[in-house]
Length: 330
Ligand SMILES: [Zn+2]
Image 1 (tube, rainbow, N blue to C red):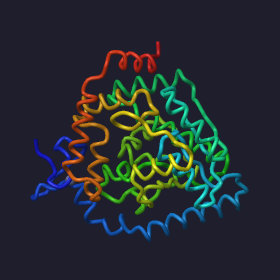
Image 2 (tube, rainbow, N blue to C red):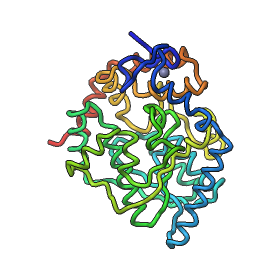
Image 3 (cartoon, protein in one colour):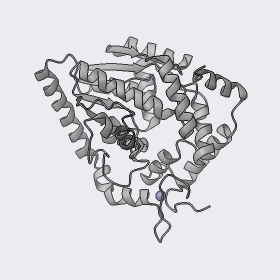
């Protein structure tokens, strides 16, 4: 099997191409833009400017909040809320999309974090029958279901931002998640940030959102404008640093087990489907970004992926039953 000489991504990775030296298009993109992507002082300055601009906008609109943050109870969103409030003096509205996949572990972390963070919080669940239909259709068509959560989480973030005149939505995507399929600057922070739901979704769906929009299948809330900013595009914090910080500050409990995402009971199923359909675990692209950035060696990344394969290539009947029961529409 052919693999990128630098990052180790395999030849069946999404839209990958190799140059004559056997280096992939994603490594080439990173190398060409490294000076911008790693200029920490400049990125920090840009982030601070964005926060100040949002405060000014919220003030002139008479809004009660400066920003909205999607809050899963996981380390990234919890960390961001803490930093926005304490370091940047932002008035934060935390927002949880209750998708029916939460775990005891996740609920405990949400409850604990909210008792320490002192922010207003909305928890929202949508029409469950409609949600089940969406999951079932997505599994059938794309052998995946995380994109349904992704869409609705952001759809309702935009809807609430519009209703409360909140000018900014800060998300907890990691640098790996942002850059995993980056081979142009379109929609990629810090080169471009998006102010509408559809532009934001381009980063995950790469044109599928355009087709869904043209077919009239999705409501992209075109009248609502809010800037989407990824905290970790501007701050270089490792997973380990995030977890230690939260353990110390708010008594956060770190997840046990192989691959994070302990706040979703269907995570093993999502990994299983990714391996079946795409031939690699979900975090293959994210780890490749860490290799490019010099945070991991190619060998370390492949060791982690090997464990993911071993853990998720097969899932128990119990896991499958629980998942299909959750998305059943009958
Ligand atoms: Zn590569």
